[in-house]
Image: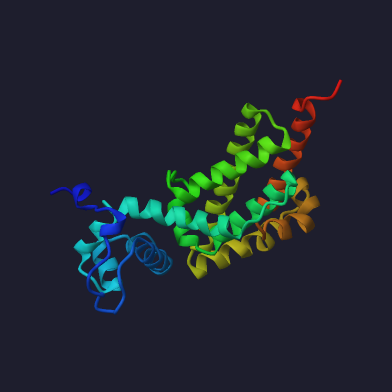
Length: 240
């Protein structure tokens, strides 16, 4: 029997007996355990043997919930999206709503940097992702963007957020030594370059060094929102 044939319906998945740790397996429990293990071990956590040991069950039991570890990774990706969507409350102000959602998405991914590096590029097609796509398009269409513009802005907004999340997460998962070196490079190298050979760096070093010590995402998000607002002024129908 193939792995796909072993996956059973949600209602039939519940174990009749608790695991060795006294818990009853569920898709949510497996996803949360996987997310925790990824935070501790990175991609190495995505093995049925390690997950089975953490859950106190036979590794083969996991195939009743997920066809393979890639499907499990997609569920983890969707769980991260779900955590953001559960805490986001739209207000009706499209620009404020997208700002709040983008910043929240970025922060939620950085709270799980190991998982972010594994999931930011994935399309899950699962419940929470579908809800997020519907919600963002709803914000844009409700603001008056024509459908083609709404889709284009949605695409840029989401890809920008996920790209910065992956970039910033990749820094957080560096070793302490590597991260310390990254931090030191700007003041120790760039701030000391002479104006004779590097006039532009030298002239801006006082601003450049502190700027590069933080994420560029908030500023990039504001640029996208400003561009979208300007575009809305061109495409929104005006009253005669």
